[in-house]
Every structure is written in structure tokens, then in C-alpha cells.
Length: 194
Image 1: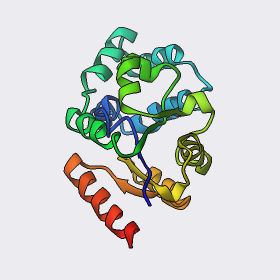
Image 2: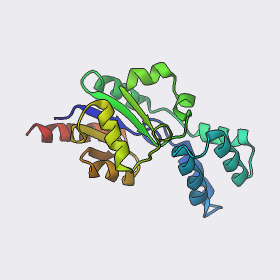
Image 3: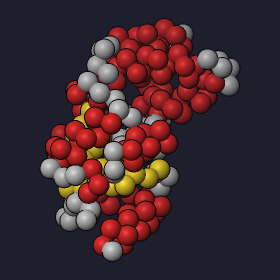
């Protein structure tokens, strides 16, 4: 039986402004993805503070720190349709946000009251010292929700992170839009009732 629904943040709950920026950069700087995400991985593991990463990324891109932040923020838009659906889901299921993100990153994008309204648990990689697709971060999320991994449905926009959740028994799906996520959840609910 499904008891919890878990969502990724960037690329799911909000558009991934960093990914959009990297895609643009790759047209003129083929190594941009590796360079940028090497820095981001350090932030997500809590090994580098966000302010230092912003400075490093701005320097790499040859823009000011302020311009770097503005470009990323401009590409980040909350998925209001998903937010409405999560509120509906929370009436019947436990919900969680599981994100590879630096310290304080979620607080810069959401009010605490908004996160409290949407989620029973929030697991941010830099806060727990693990990143997806490490199996332990998915297990930690299920533990915090007080459910088994197989009682969770997980949505993420990155295939390797979906595979990581599936590997520990979660019903994991690649998120493309809310309609598709609703269908995946309904299919899972029907399959798990048999």
C-alpha cells in the first residue's frame, strides 16, 4: 500500500534555472556542464558553502556574482499546478521533498510556512551529507516519513536519481509534467492494491 509521495525540487517543484543556464552555455563552452556541476556537487554535499560556489561560478562564467544569481533566479519558476496537487495529496498521504541542494538553498526559494504546508519531511543533501542517487538518502527519507521504501512513490526529473530510488524499492518515476505524474501515481495505486 502506498503511504507517501516524495518529490524532487529542481526540475520538478521549480524549474531548474541552473540547468537552463548550463544548456545555453554549452553552445559556446562545451565543458560548461562538467565545470559547473563539479562545483554544484561540492555544494550539495555540504563541502563548499553556497556563497563561495556563487563566487566560483561567476568567476568561471566571467560575470559578476549578482549577475550569476540573477540569471539562475530568472530561470526558476514554481510549478503551481504541482503545488496545488501536493496540497491535495497531503490530505491522504505523507509527503516529502528530497533535493540535492546546498545549505540554505530551499529557504531562499520558499517561505518556511509554504514548505510546512506542502511537506511532512524535507531532506536536503547538504544538511544530511548525502546526495542522490546514494541509496541511503532515499532510505533516510522513508525512515523520516516512518514508512518502508516500497510504500513510497518518488518523482524526479533526472533518470539516474529515479533509478537510485527504484533500486531501494521505491516506486520511482521520471517527472515530465503533472498530468503524467498523476497517471503514474494512479497506475501504481491500482497495481499495489492487487
